[in-house]
Amino acid sequence: MSLFDLTGRTALITGSSGGLGFAMARGLAQSGAQIIIHGRNGDKLEAARGILSKEGHHVLTTSFDITDEAAIEQALAALSADGVTIDILVNNAGMQLRRPLLELKRDQWDTVINTNLTSTFLLGRNVARQMIERGKGGKIINIGSLMSSVARPTVGAYTASKGGVRLLTQSMAAEWAEHNIQTNAIGPGYMITEMTQPLVDDPKFNDWIVGRTPSKRWGVPEDLVGTVVYLASPASSYVNGQIIYVDGGMLAVL
Image (cartoon, rainbow, N blue to C red; front, side, top):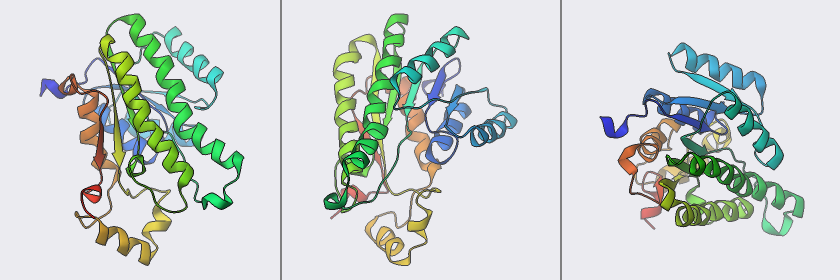
């Protein structure tokens, strides 16, 4: 359907050499977008590019530190110099650190906040500037979490950062909607990835997730594809400042 056709548009997805980011990048490419995949590990990034290219997708790569403002500016300038303009930005790269708040050190707090929240502001701001200058609008999709609305023990810094992503998304919408930029967020539930596999393998935790989730299963990265394509497409042209939870119904029940 034309409402979901991304042909002629370019999407930058951070943290997309694997996991959730890779699945979303592939989904955007399958809907017609040229994609720019991003990661810090060159070998892993090239392997991801190879997979997507063999599937027939138009794939570019970039590598920069999402917490380094100068590195972000240099990377965007390099893309612009090559004639690449970003129509869709997916701020996906992030990290988790499990520590009780009483044991959490200041530098650990700063690392999580900078990686998950400050980077979303920095990259979103710089890409939005380009979108506004071009005058053609665009899509910014920030990746939040269940923890954008609720908390669990030992993930206080992560929860604060993802709660911040939800409200930052609303702030971006408040300021940039008049430029035809739609800024929204996705809140994934518990997804099976390389990072969460130890939790999947823990019988007690796995039983809790399956029992707590109305869908009675973990999510998989591909479960995010429909939502990210929707938010990247003309179908969501009047949707702004929202977060869509893709969580199997976990937040809907006690």
